[in-house]
Length: 589
Ligand code: ADP
Ligand code: MG
Ligand code: ZN
Image (tube, rainbow, N blue to C red; front, side):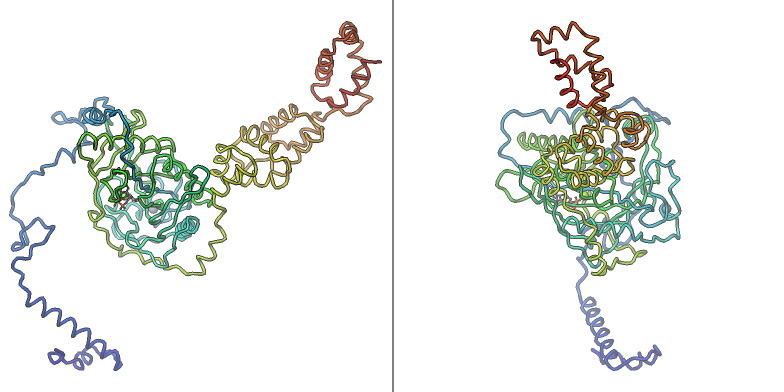
């Protein structure tokens, strides 16, 4: 074949300097290419039809015929009702079709034990960077609509994305904390679809080469850790946000506006394998995952504001089967409880469909908090529908081993381990332990507290019943753990009573003054001076002759009356032990 072209002439024409080995390489490449061309040349192409192409292969253009789309109803499912030139916006609570659907999900009595659920979760977490993923716009939640925007995140022509280093760092941290393999090379891809909240017409995401692969999240299963397998963690940009006028959602709204503030805010998406067996485990998984991300300081974890969003993929199958059933994807769950409820509902719905011989359709469904049901939103696309391809505007992320190693030291102790420590060593309840592991400032404060104060039970009582009843913001609190321990010490040494201590704490939160200063300067210190107390006891005794006589006559219960009088007199500041001894002496003499 090489006889058909002269490599030396080609090299001469190119006027490049080419070494002998390069020459051999080029010769082979051209040779291969020509061989391939010959194969194509000799192929019989007459009955080769493209598999997914609507036009005839013989004509690369179609005829000018009008054809109506036969599934228009589905596309226009969310459109408001039209009357001539105006939209009718009735106070519609849900989209049409709801009734039909709920009727079909009437609960069937009896055991459902023959079916098991298979659940896979996709969690989107907003990364707490200052600026967006590909431009320098602020990421703050709650700014004026469309004020955190620029030509890049609004998809104007000619602009180019520039990757935010901090977002990459945070994504790696998440992978390290969740036992993933951190990929040395990952690639951004365009995910193409239309929606008004997506100005570019594509979302920059990662597809074939995500930043992290594999990994697992451990949850508690009756006192033992259970690993939920992860498929991947990838980075992507968020879309904008639709704001519906006159209704909480698109259904029944008068108009919809779009706010691009959220467009291109960095996200990581954490995807599990279909490895979760029940709604409770799914909820626990999100709680644990949230805790990891929050403790890492890379996400606020606010389900209501949407900085953490969970989509649940759910299918059922007969117990013992290994093949996966058709799944539905449920969105719009804004709390841990909603995640559990929505999944429970969806499993039940699917089982009822199966048992009544109806088909489960692959689709996206929305959880509705009001009716505690899921509703069909749209038939679900397959990933190849998005025509993913590597984004030509962005280079692959190439990571250095040393950099990954450096980040390992920022990974905190795994929260499940911490939760067990809190429950088993410090005897906290499950609820208290969860409260701690879900708030990094709480954890830091509590850990410090019990490390410098021996009586753990007393420390946790004061922490949970008093301190955090005043504030959730322990990061900027004016009472350091050391201050708090000093304060507890004053109760322990009887300088102040527990009751007074609560008053002092309240005052400290009202005035932001130091606890010890309030005790010393505002006269909260216990009266321990025996002479002073003796004088007051004498006064109490001489002011209540009748009670003294009764007490002396054998009514010993009256002792507490005298203690009460002393406390009244001293506004609770008398040292109870000293008062006890002095009173006993005074009343018997
Ligand atoms: P899609 O392309 O529809 O998003 P993926 O294959 O990316 O689907 O999977 C998305 C999530 O759904 C993953 O968490 C995966 O584990 C889960 N999943 C996939 N198939 C099923 C199934 N049949 N039942 C339950 N979950 C599933
Ligand atoms: Mg999906
Ligand atoms: Zn921007």
